[in-house]
Figure 1 (tube, chains in turn blue, yellow):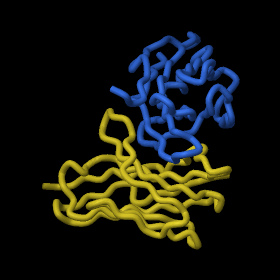
Figure 2: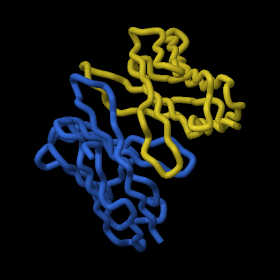
Figure 3: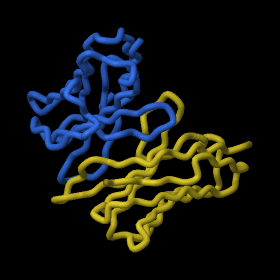
Length: 114
Length: 115
């Protein structure tokens, strides 16, 4: 499968714990995006990278959230001190960037904070 | 700030009928407008998109129209089939420097095609 992949697919954690998600973009896609989707809503933009540079962060992204893309390939999204309001589907997407507008999504990581 | 409104929130049609979903956007810098289909428990799938230098684009049973002056765009599905049943999201992207940035999504339309 050469599409965007995410790991894990599901994560259940207790309030206050830290969690980390991984996204592997489509090979050679230099732009990588993180979105959050809650039930009945469209995805909300969190942050994006061009290669290893983080170019924009949403105001939704509190300082408990941090994202990295150290070598310009896979990315990680970490949430520290999780809260029940963090429960959502975390989606990753990738695009070719300057040569293509299309963003392709991964299957998502469903986070449940108990 | 950027905002995308989408209507209707639910749409039920008979198999073979047409379905139309409408979106409006607020940021006049937006110049890329994709549509995604999301089945229950699955990832959003890009089904069609349009750029602001084009007024209409068609791909088999699916078409998208864009009115930049009015800041609205629409998805048209003809000859609907039960497998078209899903949630459809529109999105708009302010596009600086020739490469898409973030997508601002609408709230989705649940389309149900009755056999």
